Length: 296
Length: 234
Image (cartoon, rainbow over all chains, first blue to last red; front, side):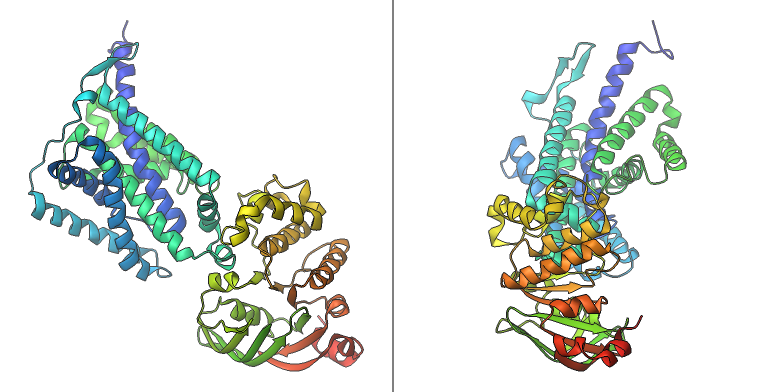
C-alpha cells in the first residue's frame, strides 16, 4: 500500500523527522516570544544567538568538554552574552520606537557572524553527536535516528521545566504579570529592569541550547542562524506572539510541514511553511493561540 | 510620615504641579480634593515615583524618596492603588494578591496573608481561584486594595477608589478605610466622592490648577458649603 506514492511508514518516519526539526524551532520561538512579550523587542539577533550556541559547543568541545558539558554550558555561555547585550545595548532603546531595538539586533547579527568567521573561519564544521546517541532505534514503525529522538526529549524536558517555572514560581508570576502591565509590577516593588534583563538572558540561552542541539543535525556554520531565524519568526507568528502553547504547537506544525513537503513536494519545500503562515494569518490574524494570555 | 515640600512636576513640557506642599501624619487619613485635572493624580504619581520629571522634596518615614525608583518606594512601605485599578488579566484573584507579596520579606507567610485578606475582604474569599477580571468593578477595586496592602505597608496612596462602583460597595469601602486607619495604616486619598471622603478623613487639601489652594480639617471643610460648591461640583 502506498499513500501519494510513498509507503505509510516512511511518511510517519518523515513526520517524526519533522518533529525533531520542530523541537529546535520551538526552543527558538519560545525565547523570541518571551523577549517580545516582555520587552516588546523583536530580537533579530535570535538566529545569531542560535549560531553562537553551536560555536559555543565547538569551543567547549575543543576545551576538553564533552557533549553533556555542552548541553549545560552552552545555554549559560550564550545566555551570558544575552545578558551583556541587554544590559549595555538593548536597554538604552526601551521606550523608543519598536524599530530601534530591531535595527540594533539586526546589526548585531552581522557583528556576531563576522566575529565567528574571524575565530573559526568561514567553512562549515562537523559536529558529532556523542557515540551513545548515534545509530537508530526501532520505534515500532521503523528505525529512527536516536539523536533526533533525543532532541525531542530534551526539548520536552526543557519546556516542562519552563512551564513549571512560569506557572509555579514567583519569578514566573512576575513574568506573566510584567508582560501585561509592567507599571503595576513596579509599584508592587519589583525592579522591572532586572526582570527584563533575566528574560533576555533566558530567551537567548534557549536559542543557544537550540543551536547546540541542532549542530549534530546540520553541522556548524556562521550562516546557520540566518535561515533558522525566518523559520523561528514563522513559528512565532503562526502560534501567536507571546503564547507559549502557541510556540510549541506551531513549532511542531512548521517542523512537520517542512519535513513532509521536502518528501512529497521537494520543489515546494522552501515555500510550504510560508503558505502555512499565510493560511493561518488569513483565518486567525492573531495566530493560533494569539488570544490566550501572554506566556500562558 | 509623608511630607511633600515644594513639589513641581512636568508631563513632557507641561508644568503640571507647582509648588505643592502637603503633610500626612502617621495614622491619619488625608484627602486630596479638587476638580478633574487639578493635579491630584499627578501628585500621587509623583509621590510614588512614576513621573519622569519632578523637583522638590518627598520625605517619607524620615527618608528622601525623590530619586528612588517606584519599586524601591514600595520596599520602604509606600503602596499605591492607581485609578485604573490595574488588575492583571490572565491571573486569578489569588495570583493578583501574590503579586503584592513577590517583593516583600513576608512572602513566606503567604498563607497567613491570604487568610487575613479573606477576612478583611469577604467578597474575595470565595473568588480566590477565579480569573480576576471576571469580577465586578467594585470587587476588582477591593482586590486592588487587597493586593497593595498584602505586604502590610505603612502608608497607602489611593486614587479615586470609589469611581464607577455600586453605592453599597462604596460605603463598605469607606468603612474599610476607617478600619485600616484604626489598624495603624496611614492613607492619602484622592476622591471625587467628597462628602463620604471627608466624613472619614482627618484633614484635607484642596487642589486647583496644579496648586494646593486650601487646607483644613475634614470637619471644617464639610461645614463649608462654599468650598464644596467651588471645587467639587461636577
